[in-house]
Image (cartoon, rainbow, N blue to C red; front, side):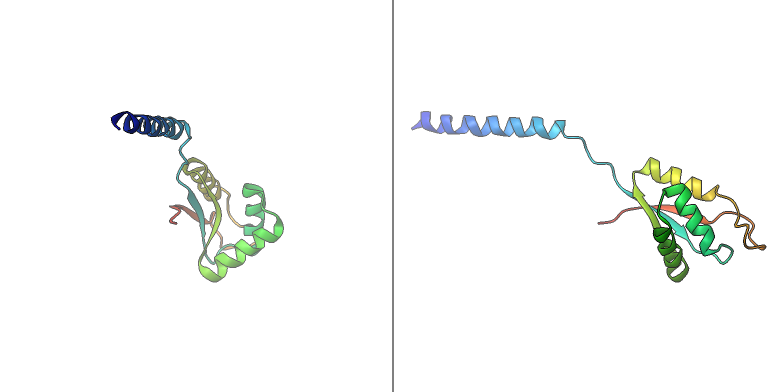
Length: 118
């Protein structure tokens, strides 16, 4: 009877070791972050659409939807990505420059990054 128990225990231990090795080999997923664009009265829809097209390669329709969302809701998520990429895109938004179509505009729009909460 003791022999049968050890025979049964060995495969379970082997499977467990295999699973542990496989789990160690799997790459861990990086946490995700949202690039958030904040509304202000000194930028036009055209400016947002152009910025979304140039920086994020969003089609005009998607850029318009983001402009509309930021206007109506106060903020909009432009992209969800890794921390490093999100930081780059946030910095690109901040460096995009002023809206030439609005005389009172003094600079770029505001953007932040936020961790994705699931």
